Length: 119
Image (cartoon, rainbow, N blue to C red; front, side, top):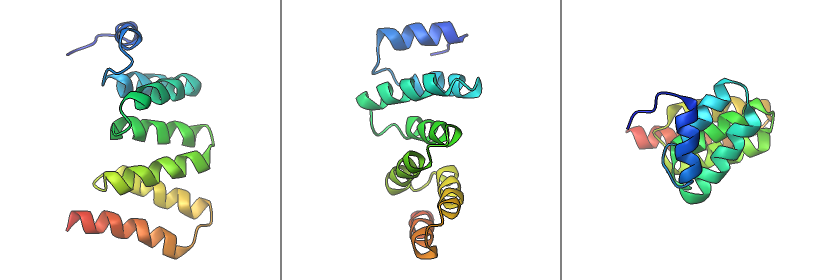
């Protein structure tokens, strides 16, 4: 399924909120710095498919851009616990945990989850 533009994606999403295309639309909004729209699309899409880890990742990126660090942290932890192969989520979580002055033990816990999934 190929979409040539944002308008087509918006129409498709508006006609079916459960469509798996929501991360693509959210990413378009994110790239345009339309964070509130990206957030809304992620929230709606994830209400239908909470295990869409690409959608979860775009949501975490959006939270980070909006300086909603606690929400980003929760989302990144969810991703790592459920999709430990997502190295970008792990990297973002480590940086965020350091920014939030989390303990080294807490940070290591999530690094270990990622490492153990790759062995």
